[in-house]
Length: 457
Image: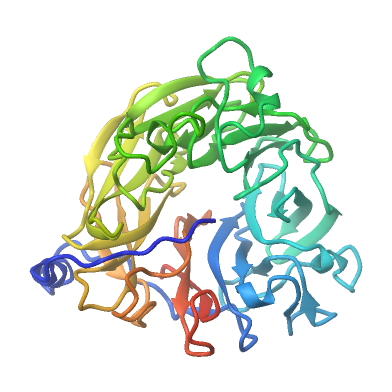
């Protein structure tokens, strides 16, 4: 994915950060256990981690390998101690992690080349993993029969999916084997085939992202898909309530760019729209609704993260920055958007904990209805970066805390590393966080980051 940088803001924000963590603040923010280093092979770290947690409380984490080990990386956890697949680990207790199992003890799926991966789970114990090789994606399905009891059921090196390029794969699933894969062509014009598949509604192409559906646990996918009209940067989600057929894709629109007459970044492109694409029939048809607007002049704009609660409420978190002439942020705002009617209309709340610079955010909702958010933050350009998380009941104030006291990027870096990181609640309603942190192995961008995990106490 694209890499972006952050810039400086007024140092007066330091006081706000101190206030948010002061002894007098109430209630207290979430507390986390000791961070666990996942990239344990020196000079073979990673970035952009994601995770899913199934009903047995199995934690599964994936991450982008470091750029210099992209084709082949050392992997001391593997039976054969090298891998081409993106990092993929599991843990039954959040303390000890291992590679995911293979069809045989050789863990042959590790040899499938992968650049960027994503994870999802359904209600029948299946865990799904897609991993882009740039022109297509490998696909793997695991079956969980209990805590720590995982087996690889199938894996293949290609979807296949119709696009010629996939800049960032996402996957969502629910029910008994309903799997939604969405792929990013990288522009809105280079893959016209999916634009005519959906129908006559305004939800259908051209756009960056195309939806490919499977109804047999990923054994086969519709290879052509449905392209979502005007979609820019997107993230999918599934409603996990019993019998639900609701699927969501939330997107920016690249500020109205169409990649033909107007390109993202052209002077005057100001039509920043947040779109909610909704399917009520498990991806067979789609409708599009306007969530709101965003500042299309934000040079570091990214997609909204999204999660669906046990009552069907849809939550989205969008990080909007004000950027300077160099394209670096000077301030940030965390916007929490909520829909009570299946993504048709949205309310909005500013949940920014303190003035300062925010890079990359994520949201999830627990089985008990608690909301959790996380973000990389520093109050000003003279401060180091840290990873924060906050929890709140819907409508209440988020109270943040540092997930780790360790610096994730030093002050000389205008941004924290990677393009995203994720959080997820388990069935115990405890928040789990995976993030990217700078190391000193090699002092080169893309070569000096590790992956850490921590769980809420």
